[in-house]
Length: 398
Image 1 (cartoon, helix red, strand yellow):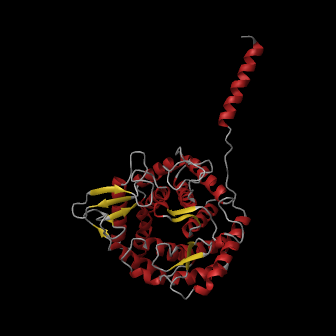
Image 2 (tube, rainbow, N blue to C red; image 1 turned 30 degrees about the vertical axis):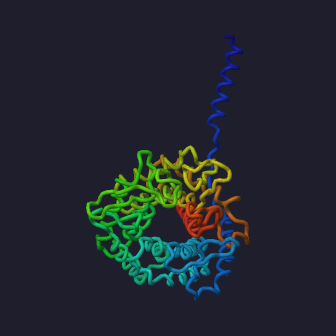
Image 3 (cartoon, rainbow, N blue to C red; image 1 turned 60 degrees about the horizontal axis):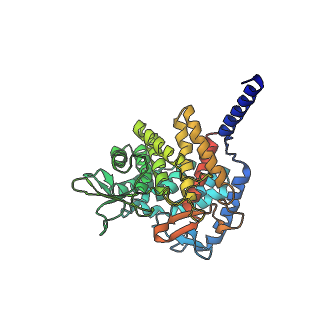
């Protein structure tokens, strides 16, 4: 090979290598326009429902088939997310309008502290009263957190070492869903307030049993495990909202990522950090993850244009990742990059709604439960909540 041919070949190889590695990192830019648009949307939403505040259903959850706001009462599992979103708008803007409104909707949830009928009291109270405490210390709010944790603790089944999610039915003896990892934050919070380690110990037991039983070798999780409360064994592993018993329901994977990140924050047990990283890797590197990083409603759903995406799963994952990277060294950069890509895409079409549309909700294209034909390709209040939380966490780590 002569010198000219050698340099030509070298140039071709170099260009090929550059081409293969030419993936310009996306850095998320939180400019004022994003927050201003969020305020504009939530002004539309809050103005549209203010007249219903004294009714039994006054909390916006989603939209109906006429693109009208669908309201729920305080015993709906999503009832704390709207107040939480208002708190995050206040924390992001310091606008007292949002603080006053958040306080109203938070106080309406007070009686939940006595509810022993559902594990989701953690979602409801931590997202509302828990976020209120980020703005103003309050012994009254502290007492709500602790009393709610006491109610949640009644669902602990010591022989199995877990918190029962739903009540027993013909299908399940003692169902435990991956979502339940999200309710542990309330228990940890209650121990920090009260000094009573009971709540902490229950949370750790549940996290350990979930770690032991809920995950597959590839670090995806089942949705529902059915436990025997006498001998503590697992009777079956199923789904309720996923594609199949063996599939990876997208929001469930995000719940696991978020839950184990919280568990590491509260305990510093490295097993929890390792599990959070394993789930993050599963999500980030999944071959079925679309280029814009907003997953299909189930990771095993067909990768087709008509297959619904789940913006809520993406927002939950992004929020979790922004916390996760605070516990990592330089290797956390890859997870920040992943979160930045998610948020960059959630902040624009087709996910972020145009002003005055989407009934005032921020995000479009979320899925509640496709197998039940419920809330498919709609806005959801928890998608907005974790989106705003992700914005807040981004802002406070930069």
